[in-house]
Each structure stands twice: as structure tokens, then as C-alpha cells.
Amino acid sequence: MRDKSNFLSLTVFDGAKVTFGNDKSWKIVGVGKIGKLLSHSINNVYLVDGLQHNLLSVSQLCDRGNHVEFSSDQCLITNVNSGDVVLRGKRHNNVYKACAVSLP
Image (tube, rainbow, N blue to C red; front, side, top):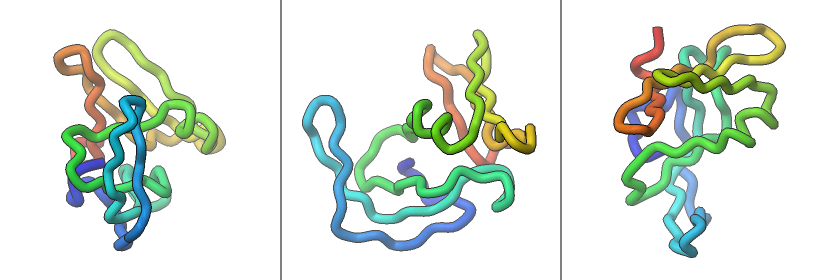
């Protein structure tokens, strides 16, 4: 994530980096939760300094007990155990944009 306002909770985190496929590294400045409510959230999301877009790993979402479904206009992330919607994203310019602030 790149925007502090998307977090339900955030703790300062110093000293680690995230490396992407192009071998560029970015500093992690915080770790927290995003989602609709604390009870329906995605934990351990990094706030990365200098990141231009919010990025979520689909495989990590699934590994943490969520179901991820894509359609032509939206992405829906639901908790497998409760069936509750954790996050919803809208497709815009061929990219699915998820934002905790825009959740119903």
C-alpha cells in the first residue's frame, strides 16, 4: 500500500525492504490492517515508501483464508469461514483498484 489513510490500524516499521520482480527495492515504513472493519480485515499489510500503486498479492490473500473472485468489472475478497466481504475493488483502466475507504 502507499496511502496511510487506507489503514484501519498502522504501526511504524523500520529496517525492512520489499523487492519486486525488476530487482528494485522499496523501504517498508509501516505494517497494519486494511479492510471494512477490524473484524473483517487483511492483516500484515505493508506501507511502502515511494510506491506508486497499492498492490495486493492474490496468493497471500488466499493463503490467509480468503476467496478472491474477479469479474469483468470488479474484484471481491471474502473470508472463507464467515462469508463476509473483506475488500471490494473496481476495475479501472484494466487494473482492479481496491480501497478500504470505498467499501460498502
